[in-house]
Image (cartoon, rainbow, N blue to C red; front, side, top):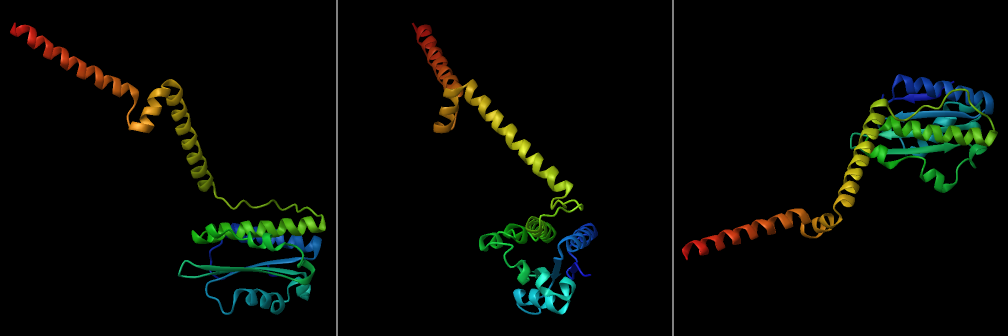
Length: 212
């Protein structure tokens, strides 16, 4: 059975192997055939393309009504089209609002096709499992790589430390913080400047005394 066809070669072997394994288990337990197709150039409108695949590839044990096709187009203009075909037996799987949120626009904008595909695929599998009240033994695949997680947590820790520094400054010198926001300098530097000016005045006074 066909579960993944990556014509654009944007998915890793690990992701494709996971989709094959999870989709095969899902079909065995629910008779629902989930297929993912990613193509470079659109031979026809995306929704029509997804429906054509469901029928011509004889998905769902030659019953397209048991099939779900996740279709994604990629293009050299940094644009992408995506659609999902739901056979009649799965037509009630998503509400209209859920379908609009199935694909994350920011992922496609960044050309993170693998992450977007995994996210959408996981949502579809969860919906089918909930509908049929089954649980897969195949673990869910994370859409994020280890380097993405390291970057995310590093950024989060950096923001946290910056906020701690700001709070420490506020509580250690609240008047200075207010002055910094209003005048662009702390009360400490302002008072220091005043003392320096005062010193100059004393020096001037000393000159007057020396003249007499």
